[in-house]
Amino acid sequence: AVGMAIGTAALIIILSIYNGFDELVKSTLSNVEPDILITPAKGKVFIPEGEAFERVKRNPLVGEYDLILQENVFVDYDGHQGIAKAKGVDSTFEANSTLAEHITNGMFSLHKGQLPQMVVGAGLAY
Image (cartoon, rainbow, N blue to C red; front, top):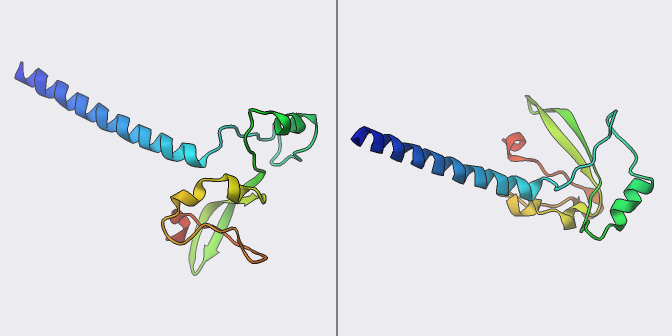
């Protein structure tokens, strides 16, 4: 009986910890990833024009939207190489995004005067 109680208690503790981590990951990703992502049916890119996009823009349920061009890139800097995800964003991204809340070193800025800036993730920065 004692063995069953210990096993049950251990299972409850492990599942509670997993549930906590699951909620943490979901809350973090929901702040960074969009609620809806529109991608091309074929190919890599598409031009966001036409009646379908106009309907999305006019829809009162759509609070805000950003146009983003995303691609995997090869990065080579100071003898270190790796694969990264580059995102080109439109002018509304900085105002609409909550990404600045997750910056731990430096500041979130897409422009310095007229010059475009890059925001580097922690995995690439180190």
